[in-house]
Length: 157
Image (tube, rainbow, N blue to C red; front, top):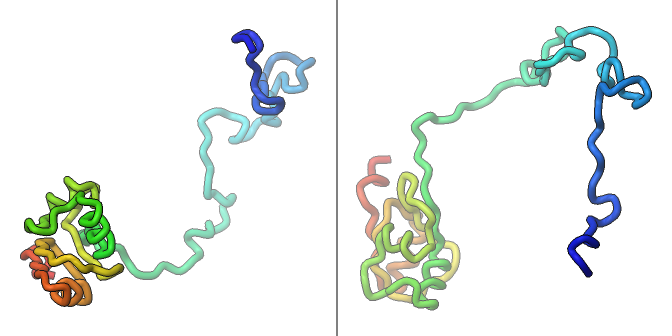
């Protein structure tokens, strides 16, 4: 095979439609836009417009609201912490802080803090220090002989 013999698979590429290039092309004169009107002109965006009828998004009932100052936590499961300890990416002997979790690659970024959930099993004796934790996660860590300290940011909620 030579460079000049390289071809795309049949049907993989398609020639672009050349609009407005004379009557012989079948797409000349109006370029497939019909006659006059808003849609025949350039710069038109009428998505969601229903020709004067009340649009569907206005007819449907609205419910609830989005809390503007809500907190978004990075979530970590106990099973993942155990897995990272087994793989020697986290040191169970030292205190495991949010920064240590980020360094290990378990959490990408803190957001408003790191919250520990109880999914998975934990067997290592840990000293965790995070922004938040579920009650079952705290129980699971203490059952394994460790401690889980929740910092003040979560306590205010």
